[in-house]
Length: 77
Image 1 (tube, rainbow, N blue to C red):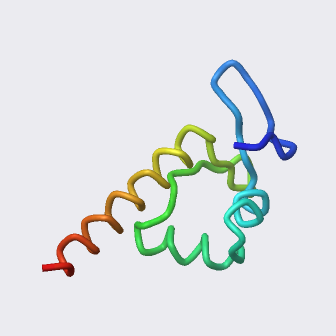
Image 2 (tube, rainbow, N blue to C red):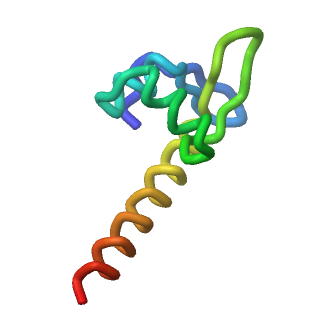
């Protein structure tokens, strides 16, 4: 991740919902929609605000990349 104002602790770096949307160049609503379908990154609430651990974002992106590769490989017969 590019260190765009993330919060840091002994447990890792954290990204806000708005920062994640900006990082991925999608709307905040897109992140909400993905999460409601069980396809978004795992996050947690701090009060009313969602936060995402950078390590979880990286793992989620890797899962999406693998799923996309499998879809392409299955359709390339």
